[in-house]
Amino acid sequence: MENKRNIVPMHNVANEIFQPVRLHYNILKPSEFFKIIDNLNCIDSIGEIRRWYYCGEILQTKYKIERPTGNHEFWIIGKIKITNKEMQFTINSIERTELALTFVDKRFSRKILYLKSMDIYNKLSEHNQENLKFYEPLENFFDNKPIKKHLSESAENLLNRLQHAKNVKESQKILFQFYEMTKHKQQPEYKNFIPTFYDDGIEFFRTTLILHQRLAYEHFIGNTNLTMQELIEKLNKSIPY
Image (tube, rainbow, N blue to C red):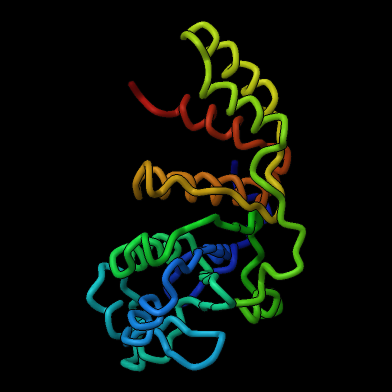
């Protein structure tokens, strides 16, 4: 759909669309966890809130920020809040979310730190200084917000039934019921769901994030009634076979 309003969504310094995401981790072995995180050069180790900088280990990754200055060590690319045996990793774009997920998984054993769930903000804002303040401070962005689960209880029950289906015919019937139940469902503004990164890998995770951003953009430019299922069907029709 054409952007008739001629407005641009908020972008960060890496020219990525500003769309906050929070990764929720369980800290399974605190002593081993702190030993690792306290020795990372790109994360400070002061207090409950830690800042994830574009420096140190990050400069060895494929993630790049091209800016006309050498002071990259001052660029904060994420915020970490550690409370009790939980770590909240909040990032302001889907590109940095992918970076955070792979960065953590490479340096922490899943027996030490385990991804539990993820929050995403399903709305884009116009690029201006006033809206920039809406996202600050980033580490508190999702606090006290009406975050809704990905699926209703009835939809979750259908998926549970699918796991115990006796044959293909029964599976197809349940999938059709699930489709009919969810095809007109609008995404909540603040959404929580369990990512399948550990089972399906980074490509599926990336696709999930891209679809959420594409739908948020469609709503941003005025196509507010479009659902996720309709977007997927629309994209499928545009793929040549």
